[in-house]
Image 1 (cartoon, helix red, strand yellow):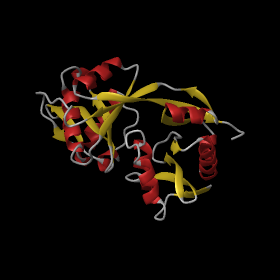
Image 2: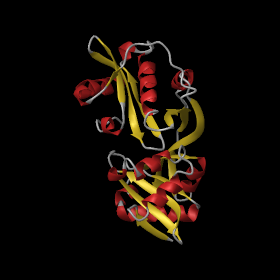
Image 3: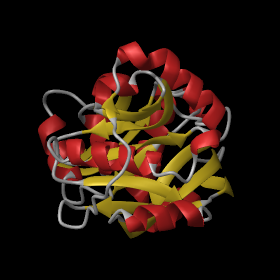
Length: 264
């Protein structure tokens, strides 16, 4: 088995491998394409056939992994290779958002501390339910001070202003005050993940976040044929709200927080 960094000689074959399941492989696809400059990506090959891809996104402060692999042997070799290049991944718990089979593969080589379930919710042009709502506005770097104020009061935890470089973002304003927003996590030619959806506590349940989500979804469909977002299983209110907009769940993912074993 040959494991090498993603580069000009293997990028096309790695992306072809990941494209076999663009929704399930959305995160590794984004790290191998749009987020490539911000990610460390390794590719496993056997006789020039790609059998696995692993990556870590470097721009967030928490250790993280995502991978796709043919079997557990490939997973083990990819984990070992990634640790050689990113030793900090062994120093504290790592986060990995994984479907059930990959969650089970990881469990062979890590002690899972917690694993809340998230639903991958998909929307299509035919299922998106537009509705009358407040006006929305495209957000730009000029709005960053207001965005950051909303992020703080709404309690968003993974926002970074670099999101404005990765895809469209929309907001609702009341008397020049940003009261709701929705933005892009990534947008590749294969699939886009939207999120960063927030409403000021004083303006909730008035349709502002729904209006932002609808506008963002429509804009995302101009960039890619597939759009999804992630929702915690326990967040029943959000699940119901997105279903009303035409999103529907297609798969359960596990947001694992785990510690890699010393005998890896």
